[in-house]
Structure formats: structure tokens, C-alpha cells
Image 1 (cartoon, rainbow, N blue to C red):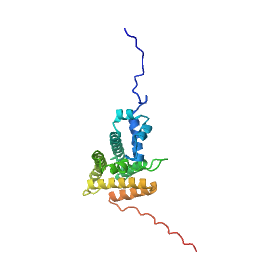
Image 2: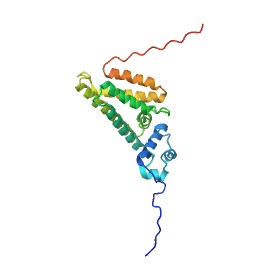
Image 3: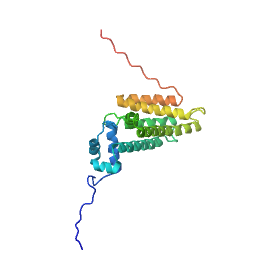
Image 4: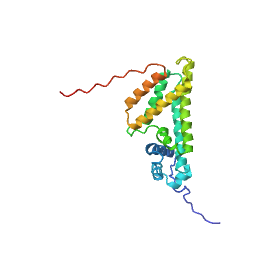
Length: 222
């Protein structure tokens, strides 16, 4: 009978406390910050704490990993929207919860403005990458549908007139969301973006947007 000694059977290169969800979250944040092209495998290794063989073994190549982060982002966004668009709340309040939540993603406290992962990264890669284009289209439709469900409920409950076009209002709601994402990345302030959301919600609800005070003209030096 042969004698044997115990050896560490842990896969080489993979951290003992490896958590696929945490690794995906860190990879997502890296793509979100740097973009797909601007993110290297070394960046992903450093962010996740996994070397290249471990990354390939767990998620596939960089492209496959990026697609997984996009899918995870869309799922998280849909869940957040479904929770915010509570049918028990007035439509205006429910919509504002969505846009306030989005601003939390676009302008994380203590960090640089990052906008939306889909609009900021996938829209760029979609031009030449069919797989990314499909994920982008799916994500946009997912957000449209979340808005549309709540808007159809608003029509049924009398919050919107019976002739209101819920699918088109949903697209307008999404367009406002995407515009805020771009402007956040361009440096617009949180206050100005929230004011934009409030004005957009008024239009979606069929009301005149609130007036904003005109900026005072600078005084000329005498």
C-alpha cells in the first residue's frame, strides 16, 4: 500500500475567498470607469484579484467577461426600476424615484462621474460588435418595458388620460434617463440633472415643466 501526503488541491491562481459575484462587480466597475477598449487584462486582474488563467477559467476572455458585466448591469437596473416604479405611489413620485436612483449610479459619492455603463461603453462598441449591440438593444428595451408597465397602470388608474401613448412615453422616459447619463459624464451638476428630471417628469405627466429662475446678469464695472 502506497503512502501519500496531502497537498493543497486549491486551483492555482484563484484566491481562496473567490466570489464570482464580487469579481463580476469589480470587473464591471473597471469597464465602467475605463471603457471596454481602455480596460486591459492586467486592469481586470488587479481589480478582481485573479490572475489571467483564473479569469479565463471563471469567465472566459475579456469579451465574454464584458458581456457578462453588461447583462448583470441590465438585470440590476431592471430590478431597481421595478422597485422604484411602485404602483402604490403617484406616478410623479415613482418616476422621480427612478431618476434619483439613476443619479446615484451616474454620480457615485466621492468618485468621478461615470454615467451609465450601457450608454457610456456599450454604445461605443456596438458599432462593430454584434454581440454588444444585441446586449445594448436588449438593455434599452428592458428599461423601456419597465417604464411602459408603470405608465399603462397610470392610464388604467386615471393618472394619465386614456389616449396617452404609454409605449412612446416610456421611450421618452428612457431618453431622459440616457441624456442624464451623458450629461453626468460631461460634468453637469447633480442639481441641474435633477432639475432636468423634474421638468421631464412634468412633460411625461402632461403638465407644464416648472419655471427656472433666469440667471442674474453680471453687473458691469463702473
